[in-house]
Image (cartoon, rainbow, N blue to C red):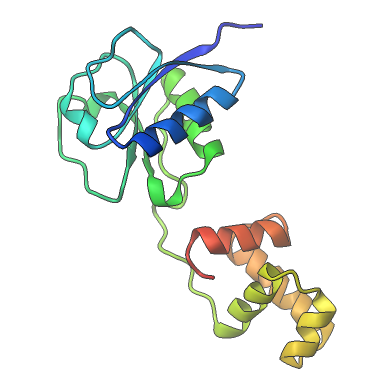
Length: 180
């Protein structure tokens, strides 16, 4: 087994710090070195996941910035930031992938950062809501007075619009984007 990437977490909010640390600990390729409320880093690590507030401290390691939608100020660490992730749209997979990329020296941009929220007509949103509540294609067709074929077309359109691989993925993406 290759050497694990050593990761530190510096975040002032206890619950968020523990959540980020938990995501790091669940991945076999990563090793949590520390999780503290404020810097400086107590030991050298490969990557540090930081909050916007923690950027006021100088760090020597590549950084993954987890922010709460607040524009970050220019700091001495700005060249060290390899990924910027929004808490409102953050998944465990995205966090882990960003940490791995930063450890490899890569820059990561937030998925979907260049595009705005998806706009979808009310019929497709209603289909999404019914899918989210566990309804079948037949039940959705009956409730909305459309044919099953039309509902399948709406579902396919929704999956395409949300870049989803399945109905479940489309529902998850719609929830993440605040559509339903």
